Length: 382
Ligand SMILES: O=C(O)CCC(=O)C(=O)O
Ligand SMILES: [Fe+2]
Image 1 (tube, protein in one colour):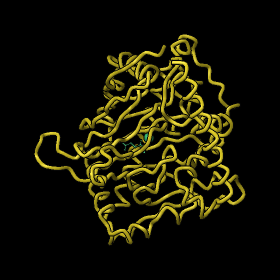
Image 2 (tube, protein in one colour; image 1 turned 30 degrees about the vertical axis):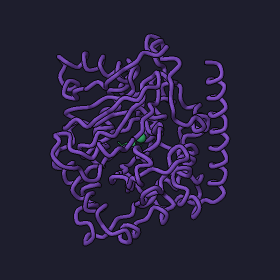
Image 3 (tube, helix red, strand yellow; image 1 turned 30 degrees about the horizontal axis):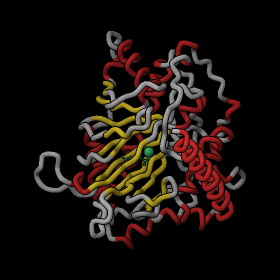
Image 4 (cartoon, helix red, strand yellow; image 1 turned 90 degrees about the vertical axis):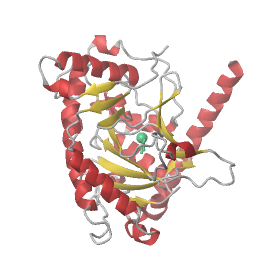
């Protein structure tokens, strides 16, 4: 049975930088990667001014009238970039109570000769400077900083698994679809007390190698699933990022690092200040998804992971995330990213990719039926 956890470890990036503390750092990181799958990272090097500017200008953007935000609607973009309104994004086949804005790190324009998933790298859409002064600049600045951090951290992940620091480098061929999703969770509109809990984001695993999540406000809404399936709160800790494992790192380590399940549940009480003084506004978060190059296939993955590391692998990890995505991920990473994008953003799919959308939804339904029948079988046995 898998080991369990009730809270997330806090790892200090400074410890990686000094020869006297590096060994201890690597041992803590190994534990976090193999036994937990989530951790807080402190002293992560992203300047606080860069974070504050991002938070402030993002607040301005989401505060714009709906018709102004619609000017940069994701449905305009065959690269799934730009703005989505409340309940337009879907996770686990249900609508999410959030607005988002996605901006990618790389942009290429002509992908006509390549498989359609190369369209996932394309131009960003930006509101005008007059509407959202400084927004574009602060997002781009944040992307540069978090990308630099993720690149350095990747070497430490390899070392923590007792491999050469450069072992993952070849999987990060550019351009890639890494980017930041800015998520805004206004207080949900409770209808006459019928519902007290709302899906900010449904249970899911990220497609990334690692995700670096900045929680910009004080709300405690993020929940992570431990290995026996219990949900654990991951409240914001000032000065830290929450890091979690995505499906790409799981694929590259052949399951030694398991992609971790998380969700955002919204409840009215989370909008009261933790100090008890007054109410909080919209919850704002900034997950950065560190993605692999598209052309990585299962055959490329021949990492020599030392036996004493693979032997740490956990069995029977429980997850409420959909399982259908796992199978596609085993054949082509680019394909899997596209299927995920289509099922999350059917509006973009309807406009640009009607046939691939229909096929992706069919696969999702098939997977859901399979998950449901497994659940019923388990329920009957126990
Ligand atoms: O907003 C959060 O706290 C998490 C968001 C998330 O998990 C995602 O967008 O993949
Ligand atoms: Fe996520």
